[in-house]
Image (spheres, rainbow, N blue to C red):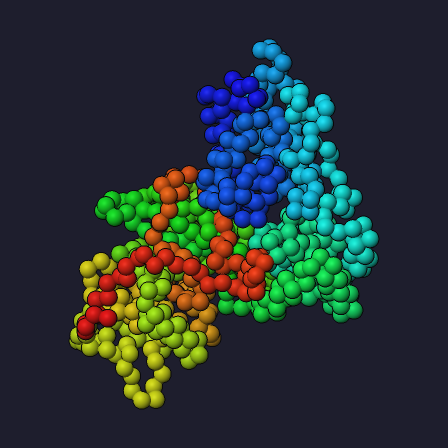
Length: 612
């Protein structure tokens, strides 16, 4: 039932809102602040709504559209189509029944419907330039908003013809001349798209095959607060990566001239300075980080949060939506997160020889560190289910240490120093096994005190750190002393043969950063062998805890509506704290360190000695 303004009411409105919210759960682009702003602007929402929490934003979008379905469903579907074409079609098909039964001139009137979703039209003019937006312009007589009918927006036209951008026709023609003969090949285009998307904070849509196509794809996107349009950012990256130095100089000249004419040259120069410092680190992999936190009531319930780093060489993980499940459902939650990771990794295609295999890192509390996460299966409900350990570099990280670091500089400094020593001096293995005729206190002192001239211990082999065992206490003390590399046999005691295998693995590793890959290879060999269950590779656990790659895993401190709930994961959101370029007008564009809550009490340190 519709109200006097043409909006929906009652149960029909509730169903309508529910459909939109459910569809928007799958719209990964909404996790990016820039795209959320775009959706909000073109639907006429206030700024506080798109700057608020994502769950609240979805609901407000749905409620807003329900007030005028005939005038706003087309806008919503069009904007969704800019980022996700299949989701646009799905949204349209699910909303059509509501429009078809909507009363207009009389109780028996039926709204005519187009046969397909609104066309993927180019992005409308930017409100910041004083032009009318798609959802804000004046309504012409006979428009869908006036007569209650739903019609398709204008057919798709090239962005160049539309020129809904801050560029004049002459400026755009000059860019065409600069880019027409650019020799960038397909493989370089993939790297160029990755770099541009990383700076902008959202993936470049479509599959542009030339730098001119790339510029045209971005020409209609709104500029961030520093007023540098994404298309100018693309031109700057072309200048950085093209082998033609003359063309590079001309591209930079054009960008500087444009920025000077629009009073944003300082912002352009700040971005260049940040770009020059943005060097790829070959030790940073594509990665999925999965945090598992048990419920405090002693039940089998756990909260699962995850982050995805989609571009090798640069650390800017995207945060996914949390979910509550139980330990028996952990494999399904991991499989959903891995599927999201694979989609992002497939869209980020750099040089294969430069990329490490994807890391799957489990951030676990002490009581779960001996859980067999490497044996979690993909497709466990199907006959061909396989363990993740042989396919990915699966290892463990300490949740307790990550939460303690923001409050304890001693822990943070020891962790970083020990990690640097690992990469400078290589692996020097220390071990703990029950029955070695050395007290735990004396062994703990050996972690820090060494003979003059000897290299420090940088790796640890020990018994399985089961709950209540001395091995768990030993691992806690090693983590407090900064150890980031530890291996153990999950079956229990560290037998001499297992200790020797671990020592051989570390000794034969050319660089310390190759350890996760070597562990993966060990697991793959054991998986392929008929008698693999007796091999250490089937049962080895590896703590690989990098202090240079951290995420904000502090406890939840959000409104009840933002709590994790069993739901379809929408896609990962790149944390603002890890964005490489700050788009605020006063920012220098440098990477920011992850933010951490200060409300978490430091975990108990059970080492002997006075409390610190």
